[in-house]
Length: 155
Ligand SMILES: [Zn+2]
Image (cartoon, rainbow, N blue to C red; front, side, top):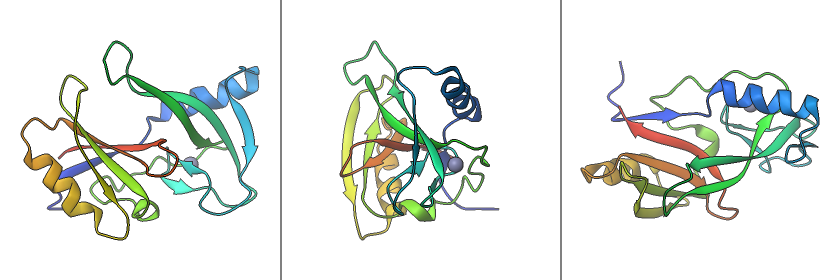
């Protein structure tokens, strides 16, 4: 049993599978790339950095759905080969403890708070953002590239 007050929400498997089918179908906004350096391509499904030489798919994902002021679609990676969805959902993923910004949204997808975590512990930041009763979820993004990495919800 974990005492964690949050749940990590990796990209759903059906979205990763759809991206893999889209590559095979030659869909124009999906690109097949090979990771060339460590720490360059985070897979949103297994929540690990792709290793150099691993193939990844780059495609647009709407982390915040359309129809809202903060609607946002941006590029994300998943492994091109099948990978196991991140399952330790009560533990913050070890690969993404640095270089992230945490954005808190309310239940209407309005951005209500944000904090950069770089070199400090992410868990207390998540817990502080959830201390606000209006926080419905927290999106974790790259502080440099801005790309969506994963979502955090209350446990
Ligand atoms: Zn993966």
